[in-house]
Length: 605
Image (cartoon, rainbow, N blue to C red):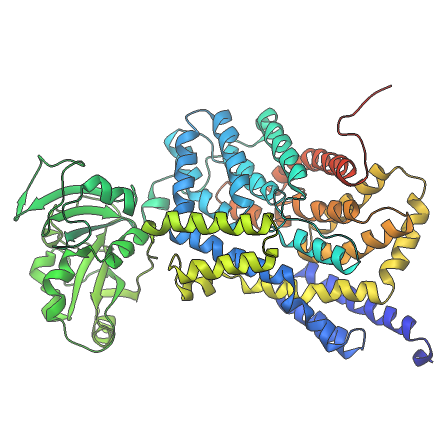
């Protein structure tokens, strides 16, 4: 019986698969990428799609661009570009709450336009927490505007949010003209301006809570005392201290300067470094790793004792903690003679509270001190089993390639230019940009692979066939026909608002990509029934999936700030509901102006 009605069978099978997918997406009983793969397999096993159609998502333009954007974002972080911009935002914010919001939101939005918005939120989170503490501001007044700006920034370009990439893919498969990289930029600019103005006007609605991590531990954990040797004949010998600090980052604090074994208080940032000089510094984990990798610098302990260490394997940095009751408590690092006892050297020390001796070798150990050790892996087994230490683990720092920051910015600019001018197709331009970041060592290949969020990549590849199946089984046409009977005589602006609202509600329980994959084909079919171009309907659907701020679970960036800002669920609804209504009106109005010939400015009478 069913064989006689292949279309009916396909629609029934697709309906059952869609119901199961929605259940798994909403309940999160399985990870979203696992759910996407199950959907893909189910579509093939039921005969709704063939294997080529089901696997087309892995080679699709959205999947390629998303993977490339992750690598490019990672390279900007690895070269210190993101950190430098974040620090500038903190300085420009000043001491007034309104000024901080006015500076942070547009700049964060611009950053999110070409990178991943969750990465931007994660980068800005500790900087704004510190900014709030230093200026005695409630952190909750700053974190929510920042997270909202990161989401709004994804509407400035086509490549920042998977939803817009999927929307473009759907339009091209429907035979419509695709979107350019800056096609949605006018809408994005309007949304950023409106969003910033809204947060400034209604900031009194934001809760006043200081946020977690009120003390300095949030940022100070991982700031190590160490000694740095200027390598004779290296790139920093004869150059000024200021030049070196500019290259390695201002977060490296110079506490003392030794020349020929004597402390020199007369030397300043403008003084020239000489080979053999020793700098007493305090640096974060990333900076310490960067200094270790710099060929013109060396950690003093490694330079002195590194050649005497025996063992097998490539030398590496590890970290350990001085255990309670350790026999080493109260003894100086010089007395311990680590290189003889454990065939490793102590190159850095972090202490929760209390003074540390000027010279690292004179520091007397305390319970809970975190030590950074350098040695060969074959010798770490003895150290790991010693009762005097706890938690021997690889060093957590990531080396920053700050000298390559201008090169990373140049590659990013060239990538955007190539895609915007259509000299290269956008997927190829961003893929080339990602490869160039790796080839020029702005980011190493292992880190580049780590930066790619495989869950998002797989999810996009898995939900694309869901949209194809909705079109191919006629489900999209069926739903669009029923919907059109309701909205047939509505003005286009109202219909665009309907699509925005549907996506805004669905994205609270599903990802923006999955929401667009489901509703995009319906938007296209509805436009065809109404005899309208499909672009504004699909764009409004994607906008609703990306910029609806009704709950904290709708966007990963909001989840990042939920704890540190001590927000409640109701805080997002109170702030987000009026903003979402405002954003929906602006989105529909601008889409009508761009693609349906509507007026740019409202007129009355």
